[in-house]
Amino acid sequence: MVQQLIFATVSPVPVTGLSGQRVPDVHGVVQLTIQPRNRPTPSISVKPWVLSSITTDKPARQLPAQVRARCSHLTLADPSFDKPAPVDMLIGADIFPQVWNDKSSSLGSGFPSVYSSVFGWVLIDPVQEHPDIGAQSMLVSLVSSLETLMERFWLVEEPDAAPQQFTEDGLCEELFHSEVNRDSQGRFSVPLPFRSGQPVKSFPGSRQVALNRFLQLERKLAADNILYAAYRKFMSEYEELGHMTRAEGVGQYYIPHHAVQKVEGDDVKLRVVFDASAKCHSGISLNQCLLVGPKLQQDIVDVLVGFRVHKVAFTTDICKMYRQIEVLPQYRGYQYILWRESPQVAVKEYTLNTVTYGVNSAPYLALRVLRYIADTECADQPDVKGALYNQTYMDDICVGAESLEAAKALQFNLIKILARSGLQLRKWASNTPELLDHLHPRCVDHHGNRIGNQ
Image (cartoon, rainbow, N blue to C red; front, side, top):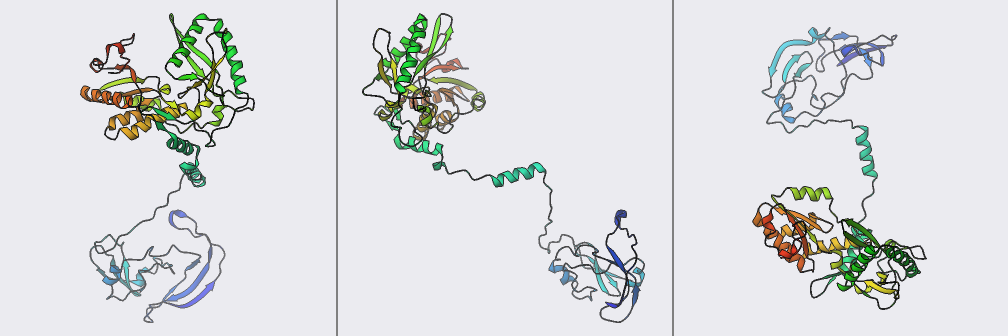
């Protein structure tokens, strides 16, 4: 209890504390008398410095009720000792002998000790963890790095991704699901996924562009008899297999085509590439009007890592995968081409009936069919479903098993399930020759690898 207070300002005097740190904001010194709150004696005169703040609130948090209950029989110097409050005065060691006496007591294990003073009993020692005391917590503040703060900023500012149905990928998936079809033999027919959701009516001048490109191609082929013969053979096979047929009516878009060749000794390997990126007179192309579709192709690294973990591994190729999937008849008018076997006959119009290499949606459509097969026909064949989802790169399946028997079962199921959709497997290769012995002998290529079905 403060009995008398006299305040006096003084000239700045340096006051230092812990570790020699200078105490700022010393406002002055006062002359006062302190005494117990419930009696007039003893009376102690002191001259404390006046500061803005001595320390933070003490105690730092509300003490458990069990502590107050343990000392309820004592006359305390501070009746509100268990509630956080500011420190009013810090008593120095110079008056400590006048305040303290020799009485002390323990409140029990896990509780602070109590000491007697002229002001009443005082609690000293930390409040330890005790089974009767409730759970305690300690708050810790960490200063994040600048990189972490920037990352959090961009995460907060980044808008939420649009729902799948409102994206181009979502539209592409919707078009596929709404129009995909299978014939009586299980072969798939798929739509061309136009960006607008509806086919473009026309591409003015696309036939003339395709005709000019074809005449240029014809002059190039005429100068190379071997290439010309290979090109004729390719187109003849294309027609014989029904992958292209003579067109009826006028097409909406005509696709130019050209040759990509690879010479191996006396053999010429040729692929005809169809250029659906060719622009018509209005400046647009078929590819510009089609959706590419979501990425379904697995990364080659993931495929190879998954392939190498098996004790018995094998690879196989889906024969002419694109050309085993038909395009719905109402979209074939956008896949017209021009061709003739000789400059001595008239240029003819053909329609490509299948998914065409060079149309930007072709990879999506082909892989989407494989996933459709995996989702609808592999409920009881999880290994086949995993192979079609995760171990297929383009038209190659790279997979395996932990034993020869399991690998044979996987091989058999792959052949059976894909054959239902008109997809045949060839170019078999394995690190275990026994896996290839039961394949038909005619399926062996010139490297000794099997290239056909059972």
